[in-house]
Amino acid sequence: MTVLSNYKAEIRFAALLLAIVALSVWASHYIPDAYFDSAVTPILLSASTAVAFCCAGITYRHTDGQRIRRIWVGTLLIWGLLDGIYVISWLFMGEPVMNMGAYELSTIELALGDLLGWTLLLFPTEALRPSWLNLPKVLAQVLPIFVLAVLDYLLPVNLRILVALYPIFLLFLLFTHVHEYRQWCEDNFSSLEDIDEKSILRYMCVGLLVAGVYFYMCVSHAHTRGFTQQWLVIFILYYGTNMILFRKDPWELAMRPVKDGPPQEEIIPPQPSEAARRALEMWMEKEKPYLSPDFKLADLQNVLPMNRTYLSRFIHTEYDCSFYLFVNRYRVDEAKRLMSGNPGMKMGDVSSRCGFSSPSVFSRTFTAIAGLSPSEWGRFDSA
Image 1 (cartoon, helix red, strand yellow):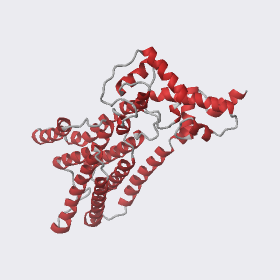
Image 2 (tube, helix red, strand yellow; image 1 turned 90 degrees about the vertical axis):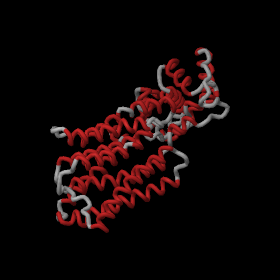
Image 3 (cartoon, rainbow, N blue to C red; image 1 turned 30 degrees about the horizontal axis):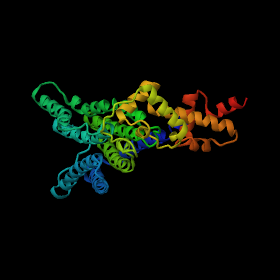
Image 4 (cartoon, helix red, strand yellow; image 1 turned 90 degrees about the horizontal axis):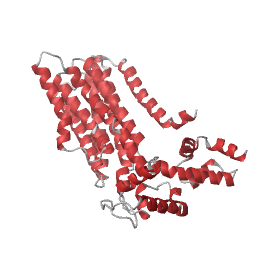
C-alpha cells in the first residue's frame, strides 16, 4: 500500500494516457469513414495548430533567456506550421488532409514523420544534457533518416520498418541518460522533490506512446492510427508547455552563485581531506544547514571554498555516498533526536523541522536510511 501511495501521480498519469488512447480508439469505430478526411481530421489538425501556436506564444513571452524554452518554442512552431499547411491545403485547395488509414504511408511521409518526432525529443535531450546538442550531433541524429529513406528507394530490400522504428530507437537512447541525470541531481541537491526527473520521464513516456502509434500507422490501415496519434500530439504539446513553464531548472539552480563562495568556474584545489572533513562536520553540526529543504552542494562553498566538481568528488571520496544521501543522514539523525525528545510530535511537524520537503519524502527517506519507518522506530525507541 505504501509503495502504491508513492506512485499515485504516476498511476494517475498512466490512467489518463490509457483513457486518451481507449477513448480515441472507441470513438473512431463510430465515425463513418467518409467523415474522417472531410471533417474529423481537419478539426483535429486545426486544434493541434491552435494549441501549438498558442503554446509557442506563451512560452516565447516567458523564455527568460533559457535555451531549453527557446528550443521548445521552435518545436511548437514546426508542428504548428506543418499542421497549418495541411489545414490550409484542405480549406483552399480541396486537397485531402491525411486520408487517415486509407493508404500505406510512403517512405517520404515516414521520413517526414521521423523528423517531426525527432523535434519532440529536443526538449528532453536539452533537459537531461544541457547544451550537449549542437549542429554536428543534430546531423548525426537526423542523417540516418535520410540514409534509410534513400536506401529504401534504391535497394530491393524494404527498409520502411526501420524508418518507422527510428524514433523509438532515439527515445531508448535518451532513456539511457536518465540514470546519469538522476545521479547528477543527487550529487548536487539534498531534496529531489522539485527536480523534474519524473516529469521528464512522463513526457518521454508520452513520446514513446506517440512513437508507438506512429509505428502502428506505418503497418496498419485502420482509421484509429492517425486519430489516436493526433489526440496524443495535442496532449504532448500542451503537457510539454505546462511542464517547461513551471519546472525548476536544476542546472540553473546548481550554478546559482553562493554568498561568500567562489565563482563556479573558478578552480580551487581541495584542502587536505582530514582538515576539510573536520571543518565540514563542525559546520554541519553547528549551523545545521540541512534543516533547509533548499540546501544544495554549492552551499558547502560557505565552509569549503572549492568549485562544485571538487566538492562532489570530496563527498564521494570521504563519505562514499552522494551529497543527497550525505545530507539526509543528518536529517534522519535530527528526526531521531526530535522523536526521542518529543514522543507525541506529529510526523508532519518532524519532517518540516528536519528539512524534508514533505511527510511522504520523510517517511520514504527515513525508512531507506534507518531500516525502519518513523512510526516503527518510535515504537522501538520507546520500548
